[in-house]
Amino acid sequence: MEQEKSSNGAKKIILSGIQPTGTFTLGNYLGAVRNWQKMQEAYACYYFIADLHSLTVHIEPAKRRAQTREAFALLLACGIDTERSLVFVQSHNRCHAEMGWIMDCCSPFGELSRMTQFKDKAEKHPDNINAGLFTYPALMAGDILLYQADYVPVGEDQTQHLEFTRDVATRFNHTYGETFKLPEGYFPKAGARVMSLQDPTSKMSKSDENPKATISILDEEKAILKKFKSAVTDSEACVCFRADKPGVSNLMTIYSAVTGKTMETIETEFAGKGYGDFKAAVGEAVADELRPIRENYARLMDDRAYLEAEMKKGAERAECIARRTLAKVKKRVGLLLD
Ligand code: TRP
Image 1: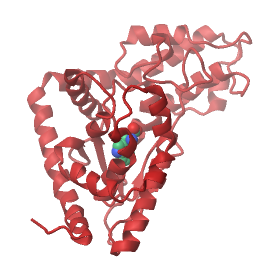
Image 2 (image 1 turned 90 degrees about the vertical axis):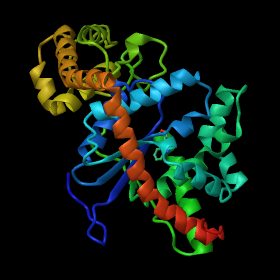
Image 3 (image 1 turned 180 degrees about the horizontal axis):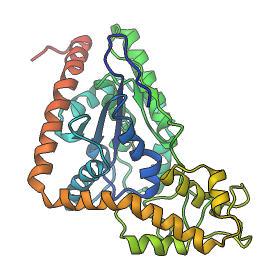
Image 4 (image 1 turned 90 degrees about the horizontal axis):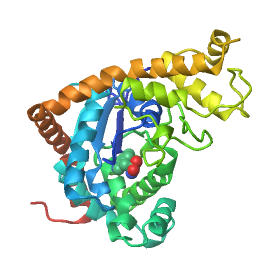
């Protein structure tokens, strides 16, 4: 990956957050987290577990605690290296909550009302439409602006929030003087879009009720092979990448992402062979890719003291960076500095 430097010669900053809501799927991994790991070379990377954002949805407290720890361990298990990148839990750096309130006060009600994710979530959980769900984009704007991030890798569902962040930052800079860098979206060309194994026209999702539809990155080899074996394909018995063959094309996308082979190479490799051979090859390639992650994860989860020490280190470093912007912001808006 090519290095890109800021005008002061420092590496550009990439920042992203992930909510602690269960184990990542192969889709999350190939579409996002694997790229996060690759970006560590070229960029200064800041990754955090967005536990404050997760409070907008009700989860058992013990489950939230466990999921936060698991998500942190998963990032490390996927090769995010705490020596090179900053990894932390959002709530451990108090600047986020403080900045969140200031951003709330810079967020017009009308703009927040237009956020499609708010409308979707409010419809899905009519019994818990809390104020946090509504001001979620303001908290997210604070997360990003605190670190003067250059790029934010986000999925499609978050692009509106990123646009919102840019609007808040532009307005703030205009009202109070230049304070924030305007962040840009980062959309890697390499990110694979992985679809459900049972309904290849919809995205692979953590929340799918059919366990055969998704591969968790912690699935055992046997389960992986079995799920690929029962993946939905078609009756043509031809391994080729075509719009009218969503099942086979999805398996090819996965195989290509994991092995680095092009679609043509894959078509040649399986010419004249049945889907059985192809599915077995995809399953084995995925199992090989995920094995070290599963092993790293087990080791990390066994060493709670290490995980906690890493969280603490991450929080301290994060606060050290964020504090500078927060102090500037407080001064700009007229809060007396303590
Ligand atoms: N809202 C993001 C999501 O649900 C998580 C998130 C919180 C985030 N703060 C962020 C992502 C800042 C990027 C930057 O996926």
